[in-house]
Image (cartoon, helix red, strand yellow):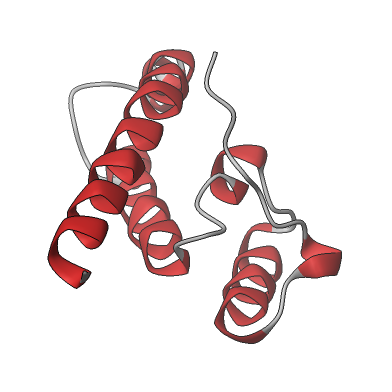
Length: 97
């Protein structure tokens, strides 16, 4: 299982602290799945926007049925996000130096 560095609320500063506060104020807490994005706060905001759009938009699925997909979504993110970060690191090294 991949290890993802996470910056906790008490360690956050700057833009990340602002995003953490924004999410905590709106949602009442900061979930672990959001903390996975701590190194890239802009992706945290986009993730939350996508989640809210899916969960609260009109569809043929009930809220309960949508909630059933959460474990699949979280598992997928835990696999895909580290791969994307590694690819970005490789590209950054290749093109920056």
